[in-house]
Image 1 (tube, rainbow, N blue to C red):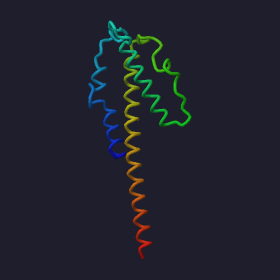
Image 2 (cartoon, one colour; image 1 turned 120 degrees about the vertical axis):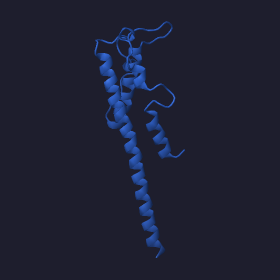
Image 3 (cartoon, rainbow, N blue to C red; image 1 turned 180 degrees about the horizontal axis):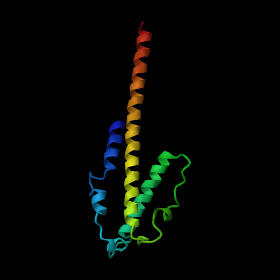
Image 4 (cartoon, rainbow, N blue to C red; image 1 turned 180 degrees about the vertical axis):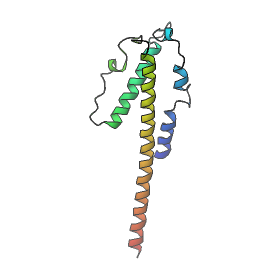
Length: 136
């Protein structure tokens, strides 16, 4: 698979619609009373998983945007301090930030694909000019 196709696949995968239920559908209308509940035999609540995903995504995005970024301690820094949302608006806030970071990550990948295309076109144009001048 060429690099452009791989980057496009990554961009598409970030939308989550390929092999999983779309993340928006998974968190939409999630019952507030169940957000901090750990189902029997499951080590994490829905809040744990939402925050874990948001923090990990934020870390990857910041790593790509900021060369001085320092990741949280692993693994403790990638999980919320409590398995229960701290207040009634925390769930919606986390979903909103997750969505903003996801869009930023998709744009970052899209920008990389476009930069790669521009770089290849410039390289091709340069090679064509060099070939014309040396052929004379």
